Amino acid sequence: MRGTRIVMTVCNIVAVALLSTAGWAAPEADPLKPRVPEAERADARKVKSPLTVTPEIIAKGKELYEGKGTCVNCHGLTGEGNGPGGMLLSPGPRNFTNCKFHKKRNDGELHWIIKNGSPGTGMPALIKGGVITEEEAWMTIAYERTFCKDTE
Ligand code: HEC
Picture 1 (cartoon, rainbow, N blue to C red):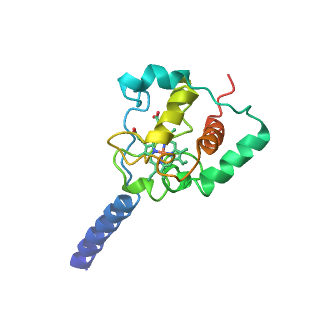
Picture 2 (picture 1 turned 90 degrees about the vertical axis):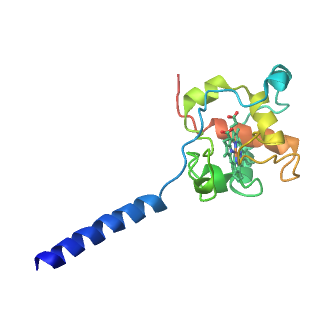
């Protein structure tokens, strides 16, 4: 009896360990540190969105984020960086619900990253790669900003 109990306890420990590994995702690297390389940052920050953000633009951004743009695969439906593809990446994808991150970055910097990718990470060069256009990237940025619920 005692032996059976010990075996069951060991099985439970193994099961819990396996389950937590399955849900394991690498944390994102410091989201407040700049990502655009220093030599290009000042220019990137000057680039402004040609779009006026309206509910229609945000809706289009959501459609792109969840569809053609493939963002959802890594950044997740709720924007927390927990998409199925993101689970495999180290560092993990950006968590867009973090308002501190949004305050730190202007639109031009986000656009640069969507265009060129984030060097040395799994964030792909989606504009250069022909996945989305410059204009579509601005729409996804408008949508990404809505994941921050801070109303200050
Ligand atoms: C293959 C996975 C993957 C896909 C697809 C993906 N991303 Fe990312 N993304 C990442 C990872 C990983 C990071 C974190 C990179 C880092 O830490 O520098 C990231 C970071 C970002 C950042 C933060 C850049 C910064 O300044 O910190 C933005 C913005 C972004 N992604 C937008 C998008 C958008 C928009 C799409 C879809 C059009 C998209 N991503 C699709 C993996 C992905």
